[in-house]
Image (cartoon, rainbow, N blue to C red; front, side, top):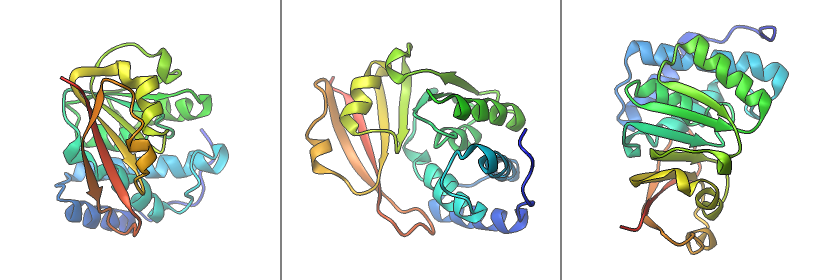
Length: 216
């Protein structure tokens, strides 16, 4: 475990998280909010050595990582989820904390990130989450929901990972400003159900969720 930087201000981060969750219409339990801040604490400590994210300030991590991830929670559905190119676990870990009944698979090909992910899953006690160090195109299985945040263009997400989407499943791709060329270049067999504007408390930047399903 990397040496710990100065301790985070847990009460301040908790207040920021809970206020943001309220704005999102999410009723976090005390245990969930504590675990989410535990995740930030772990990310801060590992980030000091392994450079897992460019965001350094814990308060900004709450906004730009936790609340940004949780903003798609109402859109995610099904009993199984795979988070492609999860990096340090975004949005997969916040979503797994929020919905312990859903099995979440966190996928990344980067070894240092998957080492962090395995430690995070262990420390946070996420019995519903597993980590897979792999290239997306090499994965097997079917999932009710695919999530992807800052991973790739829509066409690439589906070209590499579309085989993982169950027949009645959805892909929730997180984007900033919508690129029309991405929208018009989906692989055959997939369609955009809708594009949901997201308002992330405190972020002040354009965010959208693109909901994609199979033709059926």
